[in-house]
Image (cartoon, rainbow, N blue to C red):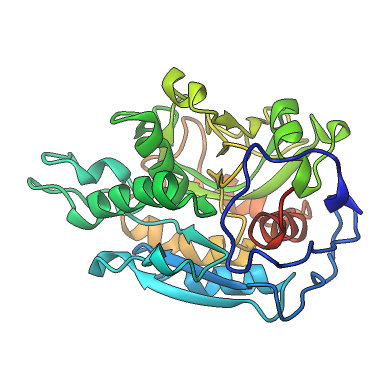
Length: 327
C-alpha cells in the first residue's frame, strides 16, 4: 500500500479528526480509474473551495466532481471570494481548502494594476481589487497560524507564489497565453517530498498531462521561498509527441507538508476548455495573446487529438493530500 511508505512529512498537520485511520488507495500511480478511498465515520471528508470569479462563474462544481471521482461522499462547501467570504479555520472543520482559478490576475490586487493579465484582459483598477488582497492575507494566516491543507489551482497557485514568494513573483507571461492540454515531468525532489502521497523515486521524470488556461505565471521560485521549504513539483515538457509546448516556467509548488499547487487545471476536462475558447475569443485574449506562431486552430486541433489527460491520477493524488493521515 502506497500510504504505508516509510517517508514521513516534516511535521504533523491538523486534520478534522486526528484519530482518523490511514486511508488505503491500493493502486499504483497513473491509473485510469482509481478506486474510492477506504473511508469510515472517523474520516473528515469535508473540503472548502474558495471560489474566485472565473470565466465560467464558480469553479466549485468542477472540484466537487473532481474529488468525488475518488471520494464519492466528499462534502464541498463553497466560499465566494469576491464577496470577501473565506473559511473560518478556528473551528478546524475542514480536511483542506482549495483556492480556485480566476479570470483575474493576482497583481490586480495592487493599486494601479494595468489589468492586462487574467482571462479577461482588463480586471485591474486604480485602487486594486480588495478581495484579492483579502485572499492573500487569508492564505498567509491559514498557512502560518493554522497550517491547513491548501491546494492552489492556476490563480490559486499564483496566489500562493505571490504570498510566499513576495510581491512581483507573479507576472504576465512574456511567452504568451497558454490554453489546452500540456505536460510536465515530475521532479525527483518533489517525488521524495511527497512520498507519503504515493510518489516514489521511480516516478521522477514521468510525464503528467492536464489542461491549462492562463496568461500569468510565477517566472521562478524566489530564494526566500526555497529557504522556507518550498520546491517546484515539475519541469515543463518541451517534446510532447506532436503536442503544444508547455510555456509555464513553474508547474506547481509544495512544501512537503500542507501546501500543494498546480499551474494547470487538474479539475478541467477537455470539453471544459473547448467551452472556454469562444469566451476567450470574445474577450480578445485569443488569438491576440497566444504564443508567437500559434493559432486558435492549433489549440483546437490539439484538443481534438486522442492524447489523454491524467485526471484520474491527479484526483487520487489530491485525495491523498487532503484525506490521508501523515506519520
